[in-house]
Image (cartoon, rainbow, N blue to C red; front, side, top):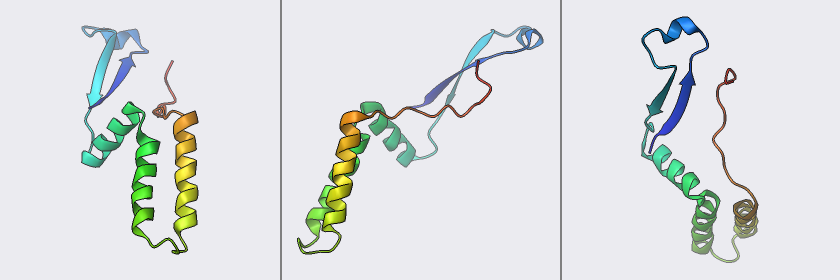
Length: 96
C-alpha cells in the first residue's frame, strides 16, 4: 500500500515539457507503518487496538490493579470506533 499525492505546479515555467499535474507515490518505511495503514484503511484501527488490550487484560489476574484502567481504555477505543474515522493529516500548508 502506498500513499498517493497529486502535485500541481504553481508556475507556468515549470510546466515546459511536463504534464501540469503529476502523481507521486511513496512506500511505507516499514512493515509496522504498512500494517497500521491497512488497519486505518479498513476502518478497524480502534477495534484492533481494543482487542489487543482485551487480550492483555484477560492475561492478568482479575484482581490486578490495572484491570479497570484497561477496561476503561477498551471502552474509549470502542467509542472511537463507533463514532469517528481516521483521516490522513494534510502535511502541506501550500495546497490550493
